[in-house]
Amino acid sequence: MIRAAPFLFGLAALALWEGLVRALGVPSYLVPGPLAIIAAFLDDPGGLLAALLATLAVTFAALIAAVLLGITLALAIAFNPLLRAAIQPWAVALQVTPIVAIAPLIIVWVGDPFAALVVCATIVAFFPVFSATASGLSAVAPEFLDLFRLNGASAWQTLWLLRLPSALPYFLAGLRISGGLALVGAVVAEFVAGSGGFATGLAYRLIEAGYRLQIPRMFACLVLLGATGLAINIALGALERSLTARG
Image 1 (cartoon, rainbow, N blue to C red):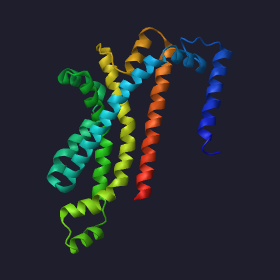
Image 2: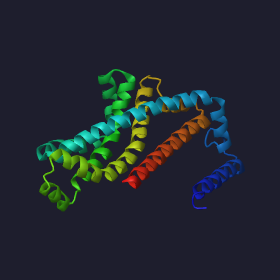
Image 3: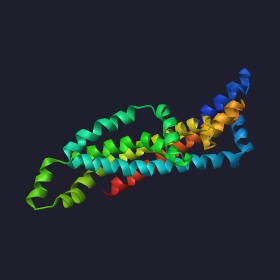
Image 4: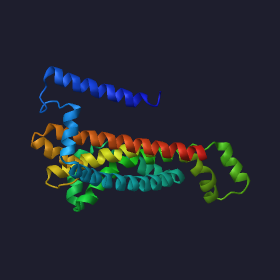
């Protein structure tokens, strides 16, 4: 029953939404009901799904880049206090900089639309992986480090056998957050690129529907994005539970 609760709540919310829209006579160009949104999706399922795939390509490319960058920087600052002092403030500054403010510059500098979108989404997504992994690498109990030293373990053995297993739960928690942020970064970058004339993914379809006052189609795009974000979170959560259970 507990597992079915979100599904049942969603059905009840959709039924209430549809009922209120019909009872109050709200026109679909203001707030479309769920049936109108489904109809808008069924009018062009191929086009919307193709646009979603384009957004997912940017999202997963950015997530992979964020993981590689985050782990590399986390390892660097974990073993070198000078690098920690040099890198960490800039990583924080980059994280708090609104991507919508620098996305136009990145698109101009990079040139290639897909690569530019990936760079923008990576900037948004990399910090949770970086911060969580760095915390995990530093969270090893001192007595375990002393035990490894007493047994003559090398720095590589200590990293491989102690620090990395200790950091795994932290990394997976950061990865789960970064998965959603990669999608957000991809959508924000696509908004900027779409405003500049680049026909990209689902965010561009959302802008296009807004210009044409196709409000049900806009909601269909939003529902697809929300469902995609939920699916990414569930998949990464399952991966986290699987790997931590094995550990």
